[in-house]
Amino acid sequence: MDDVVIERRRGEGLLSTDRERLDVDAVLEMLRGTHWAQSMTRPVLERAIANSLCVGVYENDRIVAFARAVTDLSTYAYLTDVVVAEPFRGRGYGRWMIELFLDHPDLQGLRRIALLTRDAPWLYEPFGFTVGVSSGSIYMEIRRPGASARRDPERTG
Image 1 (cartoon, rainbow, N blue to C red):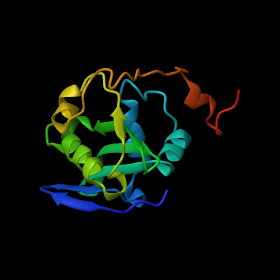
Image 2: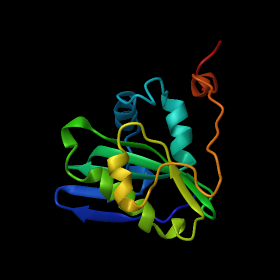
Image 3: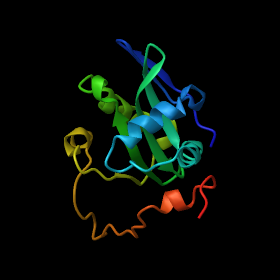
């Protein structure tokens, strides 16, 4: 995925969409501390990063927040893996990353931007995200716990 690289500074933070800046191991450590990505592996995360629009927030060249959008860059984006390292929460980095996605030139004109959240609706609601069924549509899914681990080419069995 070739995306526009955007970098912005705010206080001590640097927000960047440059994948080359990402410290995959540090992102993996943050994600493993969440309820949704505890068993994520490095190869799975690498593949997810390569196929998503990603943003990181850095302080002193250390990544302290991460998020990504799975998107076709034309009609739809799914925001996921929004995470801020515990000591850096409360600094507005989550909001800053969401602002970036909503303003990103490659994500303009999309029909839908979606996300799932269990514990942070307060983060997304001020941007216009709403809960519930829209225009008669029903959210549906197939759940496959551990599926990403099974698809990990590094794992056998």
